[in-house]
Image 1: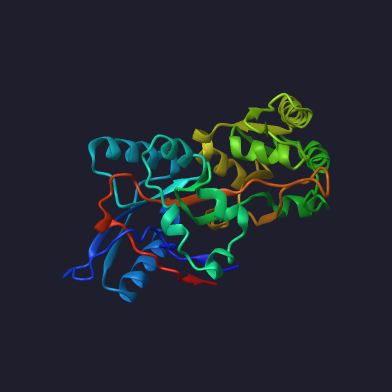
Image 2: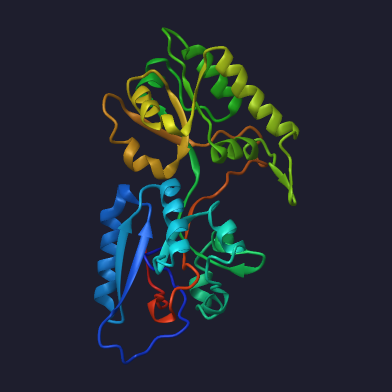
Length: 310
């Protein structure tokens, strides 16, 4: 499947062909780690046509971008285009703060829409309406210290039972093998990898057997010194401990591979997310959509650009 380039076909609601100068499209995004790549996409798009000039602007990470956007919306100074993490856009769309792109999306070629997995295409939809189009996607994976596992004669664990057993064996000299991050997305993946779900329709299932089993295992491993609990604010410290061998396993987005492989002192390994029930386990999609804040003047809205790169 081809991945979409910077401006996945978006909102061609109106444009005057008589414009003497290209329309400036300010694009807020959270891809600081690969901002050079994003800038390259913009240059490629800008060179391919003369109606728009896309100007990417890094606004920190996902969590830092959202309050900036909310403040800009309140002040009437929102950008023409914004990258929104999957869990952020529904509340904004429901609150009428994002443009409804359904009419424009319905005009996209079937070949383009069919080039995307259905789950990816639906990531920007709410109540049957389209408010964002998929841009970047990721899934959770298991990263590990390949040198430590190799010296112990072990290979990457396939299941949560194997992960706990290996962590027990490697928990020596003060080492706490598993980084147990307080992150909703990887916990959701933990539950789904056991064949469970955190919701049933619109109702939460936090007390479901699979959710309880997942949380109980993490608590058991933490109490036994086999896992190191970490908050999201401790990400830098966790990365340092992982690099120096204090931890061996970390559950993270495959998108973190770009930065994680630059960590010094050790060889990084990557494996599929542990699957406790083969045939039943799944993992959640992560990533973000491209959306247009409500109130953006039609002439400032980017036109469809149905191109991609392999």
